[in-house]
Amino acid sequence: MSLAAGPESLTGKQPSELAPKTLLALQSHFNSAWPDLAQWQFLDALLFRQLISDPALLRQANIATLLGAGETSLQQIFTRYPVLQTHQEVVFDVHLAGKATPIWPESLSLWLLPSLVVGQVEQGALVRIAAAAQLDNLIMTNVVTLKVGPMTN
Image (cartoon, rainbow, N blue to C red; front, side, top):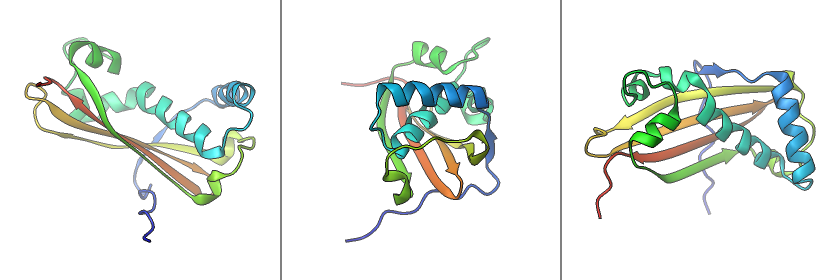
C-alpha cells in the first residue's frame, strides 16, 4: 500500500482573507447543523467557500481571461459557459480526521493557490482552482478541476 502525496507547499503562495467574525459564525452554523462533523469536513467546506467567493481568484491572470467585459464573479462565468466539475481532490493531515474542535481565528491561515487553465474556453478548457488551510501546523488542500466551455455529446 502506498500513501498519498502530502499537501502542496504553501511557501510563496497568496494568503486568502477570512474575517474572524465570519469564521466564528460559520463554525457555529456547522456545529449546530452537524454536531459530529470531523475537523477536515469543516475545513473542506470552508476551503470550497473560499474558492468560489474569494475575489483574488478572479485577479489571477489565467482566470481573468475567462471573464467577459464588466464581469466580476465566478457566477458570471458559470452563467456564460457550461461548467462541469470533473475532479475534486482533498488532501489533509491524518490528525484532521478527528471530531471538529473550536478553531480560533489566529490558529487558521488560508491560501489561494495558483490556478491552471489548459486549452481555450471556446473549445472547452480545463480549469484547476485550489486553496489550502493551515490549522496550527496541520495543512489541508482542496483542488477542484472544472471543464469550462462547449460540451460535446
